[in-house]
Structure formats: structure tokens, C-alpha cells
Length: 113
Ligand code: DGP
Image (cartoon, rainbow, N blue to C red; front, side, top):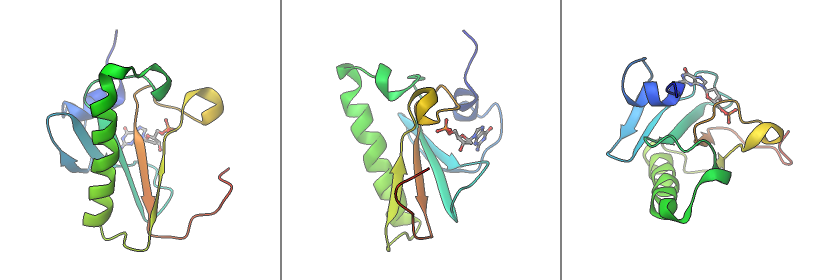
């Protein structure tokens, strides 16, 4: 199987504005930002999407969310922010590698599109 674009970013094979990384996750600026702050937090392990995550990934999923919350603090999103996980075609997922969108720096509308 060929690598996903996010695996290639995690491996530094293609450039991205990385804002955080550790042994489990990498966070980088979205190439097409939908808010003044738009960061993607991705597991290094290429889980295609949330629906395919298993109980074995429970700790990793928690780490993804806690990393997003820590980054929101670090990036100064004190007024609030939104986390989004798009799952499957109806959910608007375009890259088949699980990722959490961290969006902030503006007031979010509801319902989302
Ligand atoms: P989704 O639609 O939830 O699968 O979101 C995928 C996001 O990934 C989308 O907001 C654009 C972003 N993206 C796609 N390719 C690249 C890339 O090569 N670099 C970066 N930084 N972001 C990318």
C-alpha cells in the first residue's frame, strides 16, 4: 500500500508547517485553512478513519484529543475552538488517514455545513 500524504508529512518526506510532534502524533498547519488557526493533529500510525479505529487504539485516540487541547492553549485560543473529525464520504473526509482538525481564531457557526 502506498503511503498517505499525512504519513509522508510525518516522515518529513514532504514539507509542512509542523507545530508539534512526539512519538505518536504530529500536528501541522492545514494547507487550506478554514479559520485563522487551522491545525491537523494526526497519528503517525495510518488509521484510515475513526470508524476503523479499534480498542487497541484507545490511548492513542485520547492522546490525539489531549494534544489538540494542549495546542489550543499553546496557540492562544483562549476564547474557544472547534475540533472536527470527518469520517467517510458523507462526513467530508478527503484524506484517508485519521486526523483531528483544530479550528480557532474566529467564532464558529452552527450547524456546520
Ligand atoms: P478532511 O477533509 O477532513 O479529510 O481534511 C483533510 C485536510 O487536509 C484538508 O483540510 C486539507 C488538508 N491537506 C490535504 N493535503 C495536505 C497537504 O499536503 N499538506 C497540508 N498541510 N494539509 C493538507
